[in-house]
Image (cartoon, rainbow, N blue to C red; front, top):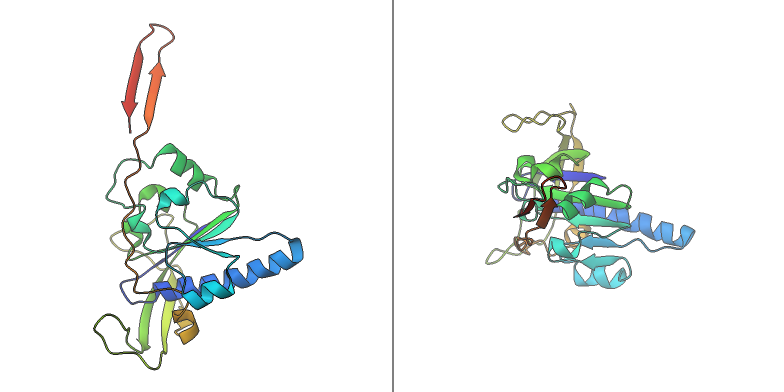
Length: 225
């Protein structure tokens, strides 16, 4: 299962991922108590120190997609999906990555990611996405940052709409839901991640070395992609 949240800067994407992390953590603790297994939650956003310390067994961090491709039985919080799966890369994703994305349900992998626009993400990932929502902040306290005044009281509200992605109209994305769902901005959600962290682009994956042989004439062909 893959779900994506979209929206411009400071629209509430990280907030949605934070709420999703809280929900997943609560559920995974319940599953551990009931079934005896520990289901980890991986994130490419750094967990806040206090939150990580309180939930050490469940929370993991990854810095590049090569560290996460192939994982099984986990939840993944993936900020800025376009840095790992950029739409500007026209060639297909390599076979191992595509296979992992295609068979995520079989391997117990659930991905919750963000992007400013759905079409910023590589088409091979978009085709595997089940749900995409768009979020917009309508009111609330301003966002803090480097050389900006401290925000003493955090509050606000965002609105969420599900958008139609099968098919997806890049030039004019259509909303599936008529009425938006609210998402309230609260201090506890803002203290789960380091929201000022800059998500870097992943390293280029190595080319795949492919050899093909014709059994009729004996011709051998080697190519890379």
